[in-house]
Amino acid sequence: MLLEAKNISFRYRKGPWILKDVTLSVGEGERVGLVGPSGYGKSTLSKILAGYIKPTSGEVLLDGRELQEEGHSPVQLIYQHPEKAINPLWRMKDILNEGWVPDQLTLDSIGIEQGWLERCPGELSGGEMQRFCIARVLGPKTRFLIADEMSTMLDVITQAQIWELMVRIIEDRRMGLIVVTHNKALAEKVCTRIISLPELNKL
Figure 1 (cartoon, rainbow, N blue to C red):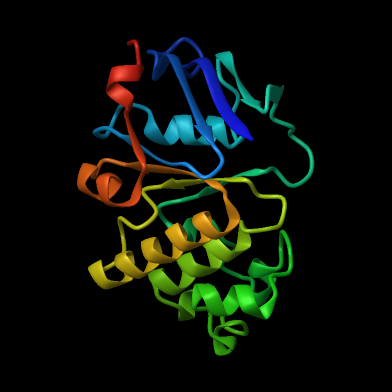
Figure 2 (cartoon, rainbow, N blue to C red):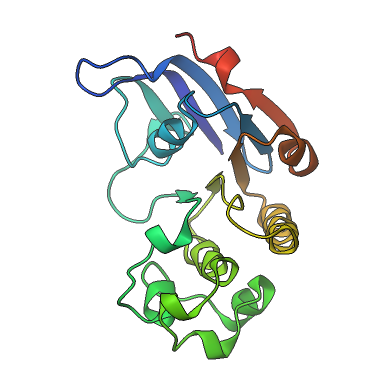
């Protein structure tokens, strides 16, 4: 399976271009780092690849076909701030089961403790919430994960644990991973290939 962005350009109404003619591809089993400083459209491109927003021009293809808007998308996005990606009024078990119901083996492998399921988001740390966000997007139909600065707000020990977990999941399931980051050292450690967005973005 192949995820492709073809000649993607994006801007808000008649504002300045954020992305211009960006083309890239990621295959199953690949761990690709998408690196660049702030302001080069990394997060915008992440949302376009996941189908959250439409490009001004260009297209996103999955195995040669346009990404479908309905149903569970095989391309899932994990945000930098887990607290902004979940409903603060729900209990964690309801947040977890929103897209699918993970089995106990999945929860154990991600390090989610049973006692956390009945808690609300405000009762968990950032690292604990991020584990739920990861588990939530790992439904059986997911083939590509996009991690947008996923570990930036976490402490160093939790970062290492989260990335070790992600690499293991990607390898076990032969999924594709796009690591969106300004941290080139992280990308070099986690990824099998690195793409510089400033070099792709023809602004």
